[in-house]
Image (cartoon, rainbow, N blue to C red; front, side, top):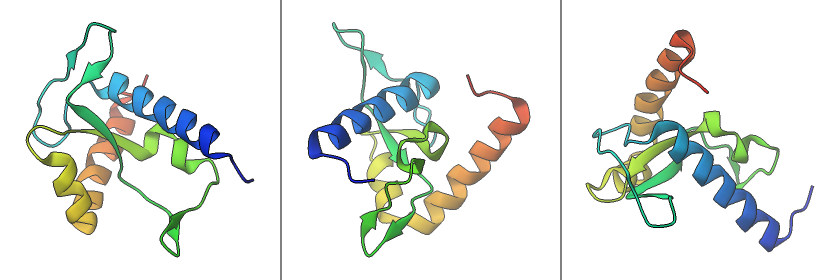
Length: 108
């Protein structure tokens, strides 16, 4: 399924919002996001912890927008950059957190 750039951008924003609203804090350092005047959480970003890529591009199969494949990481303390720069280590780190959440039914 080929999505337009506008559709990809819209779905990326929805993914970001869903993940950050669910977690409300950085899952690496614990920094709590703060709400801006529009009510959106700032200082946090959604990171795809379990990426499925082919030839450097996302496979658009629905998993890209699955909030279970995302975690909140802060942009202030460098946690998002750490996750991007250490893909194997971060994938294992966040996989353990997500598995524990599923066991405890912490998902909304």
